[in-house]
Length: 102
Image (tube, rainbow, N blue to C red; front, side):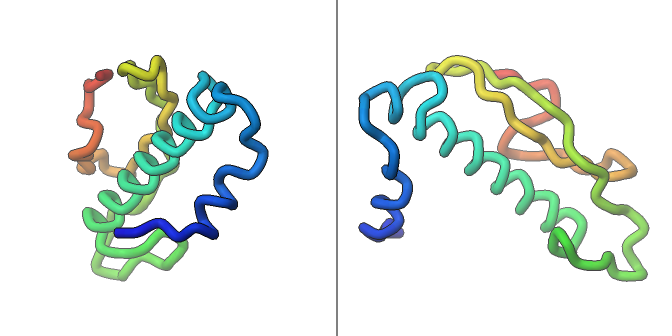
């Protein structure tokens, strides 16, 4: 996968100091959080069998049920991540398992 120059330019808009990229509120940390949340959403989509924003198939009684806040601890400090939920709690994420904090 290749990231285009245009996408990089858009992401780096407003980055003027090293802290803007690597700091506690920097772009790298935000990208990690957003990518994890996107991957977790894709896991829930695969689990439920329908895309976010679409109507659930009539054969699927389980539905999306918002998110739960979770703080992961890693080499970059704390990462607050929104973990998607389903109504019957059968969703077991692979990326960030239940009970996992690191």
